[in-house]
Amino acid sequence: GLAIPRSPDWIAALFAVLRVGAAYVPLELDHPDERIATIVEDARPEVILTVSGVSPRLTGELIELDRQLPAAEPYVTFAPDDPYRLRHPAYTIYTSGSTGKPKGVVTEYAGLTNMLINHQSRIFEPVLAEHGHRTFRIAHTVSFAFDMSWEELLWLADGHEVHICDEELRRDAPRLVAYCGEHAIDVINVTPTYAQQLIAEGLLDNPHQRPPLVLLGGEAVTPTLWQRLAETEGTVGYNLYGPTEYTINTLGVGTFECLDPVVGVAIDNTEVYVLDPWLRPLPDGAPGELYVAGVGIARGYLGQSAQTAHRFVACPFGAPGERMYRTGDLVIRRPDGNIVYLGRTDQQVKIRGHRVELGEVEAVFAAHPAVRFVAAVAQPDPQVDGAYRLAAYLVLEGAELADVAGEVSSVLPDFLRPTHFAQVDSIPLTVNGKADTKALPEARPLGALTTAGERGPETGTETVVCEFFAEALDLDDDEVSAVSDFVSLGGHSMLAVRLIGLLRREYGPVITIRDLFTLRTPEAIARHLDEDRHTR
Image 1: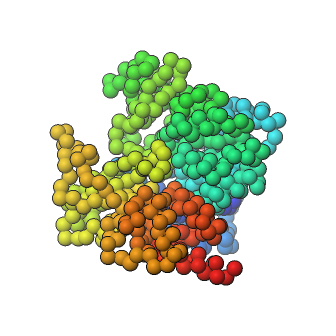
Image 2: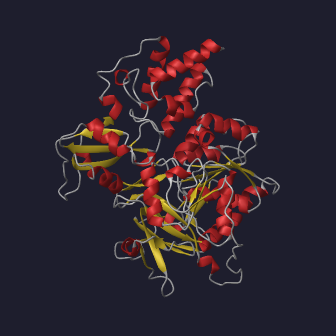
Image 3: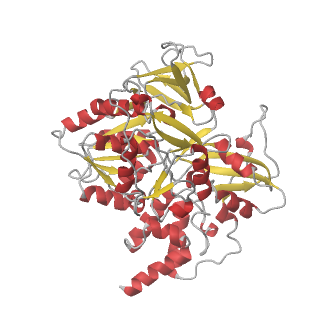
């Protein structure tokens, strides 16, 4: 296991694990301790590499890298001439699981090796050729617990320079744009939602400081974003699609290859099939489920043979014993070979680039003794083009909505935590017995439901900050009090960037993302701003 604060030490530890032929499990330190413990219990790592500041949160065999290391004999790596060496597990990354617990996807070295070979020819070479094959600088902005973080590490393996952006920098769009300009960053890898915010902060404005390559992944790309990248001289965009179950990427396409935001064509040594429910191939233009097969397919879900058998099925088009993964994605194949993403065949959604099973959110809420029924719903986020937010509808008995929401949300990571809530008498059902989401009332942020009895703004600064809260969070002014909590009002990392932008335009670079999540209320933020103004 790797439980190290975001730093070059994380990279050193990761490659040390791979160098001895072992596999790693990344532990996201932003997640609640309960979720980290669940993953550790399920993965059962032999040892966890960590530091003394983190170790109190962990259980099991620990090695603290900032203390004297224990004596050990040199470990012999697996033999380079071992024909099966690439079939060893390289990592297990946990994703949302519909049963209420995260599930670990076991990925082999073969998939990572194939990704590097594919990227060198299809992505690196076309861009590097335009820039004299010089050494590129890459900004690493993705969580190491997210398989998309390997996009930057593949550049490192190819001999390029990777800048590890710390937790605050990677989440702060204005600062990250400034950093990219100051350090002449050539490649940035982000979700489409975050790319839109970086562009709004000026990422592409200066023709002398634009990154030559913007990598996109984790969620669907909007036509507006794709067109902007395609029309920006000196910059190309590249859309990378793929489930964790197929080693990061399955399909890819660049703005130099296609004018609209499709998800592309299969990467090297990969086959993709568009099939009907009876696994029959469909003609071009007919919608069907996407199945993928090839060298990058994962072993399956750690310790979950039934789920593995359900999603990893026999491939009738390949060699005996070959498997394919059913993605659950509804797609069509165009005559030019490009795949177009249409949606999902199940309840899985993407929230800020993270894969979310609505069933996991419902299972955690349903475990609370006061919850009789629950429905989790993904709703379009009006504040972020192409993004979604989570809403929870609860039928309660003997408890207040605020108490239940607070207790359950405290054990969920940020991307699984609903931002909007509604207490209802019952969950309306369709004729098929499923929750009828169209018949549910409008859900509101928890903080907005409790504003009535709270004090309003009293100073000029508090008034302005409350107005910015309402604007950034798409709320009415009377739904924000002076003591309203940013997170309780539906705030999250992406909306924090929007709010920080408004505050900085009015008051200058006084408030950071970290300040916002520490201060949280208009009252505390206004006090911070006033104190800063008085000390100048």
